[in-house]
Length: 116
Image (tube, rainbow, N blue to C red; front, side, top):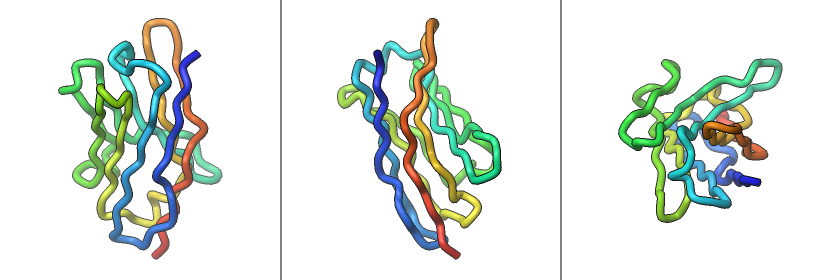
């Protein structure tokens, strides 16, 4: 069973930065894609950013383009999300997701709160 553990969330002022990490229990190179999703209170979970197995293909939600960067460290089996120029509307629980041909795995989430 794959385990994903997120960290790096917290409280930050608008305009600030955070870096989220997602540590996987196994090799992340086996996943066809990994991504970050978020869910704000009363809203549906939404895709924030995703990186595909090649490592060179990424996509982002329009709301975070130019501010967030997804990356991975294969040697460390870790997925990252660098978040700059944070806005109050970025406040949410952020989840890591990993997919392969057989299953989809989720982490427990990490809270990000951006104060105005």
